[in-house]
Length: 423
Image (cartoon, rainbow, N blue to C red):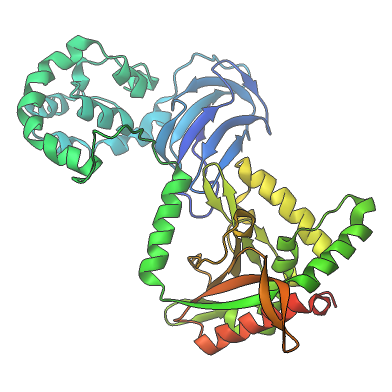
C-alpha cells in the first residue's frame, strides 16, 4: 500500500511553505524519526521527520518548489513488501479532482474545452499549469511523468520545443500588448536598468518581515519615549558576576542583564505588559521577552519565557542557545511565536539611539543604544559616566504615555541600581 506524504503544518499559522531540500531520494528506506526534507516556513527552515516506515516510492514535489500548500501530497512511501515502482491507487489520485475548477481559467482555449468534453481531461499540478501558462506551452502536447500520467513541473521544464511552437503565435499576438504591464509590475517605472545590479528572490522569512512591519506601522499608533541611563553600576556588577561564574564557563553579556531588567520592569508596571484586541485588552501575568536576533535570512525574535523569575546565568545560557539555532534556521515554532514584549539591542553596532517597530500583537518594544562615555551630572557635579539611551515604542491604543513613562523610569532605576532586580 502506498502512503501519501503530505506537506506538514510546522506552525499554527503556516498555510504554505517552500520545499527547500530533500534529504532522501527515491528508493531510500526510511523509518519513523528519519529526516526527510527541509521546509522553509515564514519564520525558519525546519526539518521534516518521517512518521511511517517504508521505501520512498516517488517524490512528487521537486526541491526548491515554493508555495506548496499544507496538505499537498509531496511524496509516496511504499510499505514493506510493496512494489517501489507501483503507481498510486486510484483513491490516492482522487484529491486531484480539485484541479477541475481550473478549466474556466483556460476558457479562451477552445482546444481545452474540447478535451474536457471528450472526457480526456489533462491532469496537471497547479504549479505545472501556471508554469505552462507563463511559457505558453500547450499541456495537451506534454507527456506527464507523475502518478497516473500527471504533468508536473519537471515535465514542463523539459517539454520539447515543438510543444510550444503552436502556442508561440498566439502568445506573441496576445501577450505582447500585456508585456509593458508585466514589466511594470516586476520593475517600477523609476527602476533604472542601466545601473549594474543583481535581483535576489525574497525568502519566506523576508516576505513575512516585510508584511508584518508594514502592518505594524500602518495599523499601530506608535508613541516613543527615550531615557538616558547610567551603566557604570551595571557594568561593575556584570564584572563581579562573571568573575564568580568563570569556573562554570558562563560569561554574561550586558544584554542578558537588560533582558532581566525589562522583564522585572514589566511585572512592576503591568499596564505595559498588554496586547490590544480591538474591543478587549489582554493583560499578561508574566513577562516573556522576545529578543531580536539578526540571521542571514532576516530578523527573528526567540523568546526568553518568564524572564523576570530566571537567574541571569539561566537567561544567558538560553539566549546563547536560541541565538545559535536562530542563525541556523533551526528554531521550533514555540521558541519564536508569542512573547509579551520585545527588546532590540543595536549598541554593538555603535548605534546611539533608534526607534524600533512594535512586533504585533505585542504592546511595546525597547530599543537599546550603545553605552558611551559622556559628560553627565552626578550628585550635582559634572562628571564622566558611561551612558546609554533606551527608547520604548508603545502601542498608544493600549498604553497611555504616562504608563509608558513609568515603565521607562522603572527600567532606568533597575539598570542604575541593578542589585534590585537580583533580589
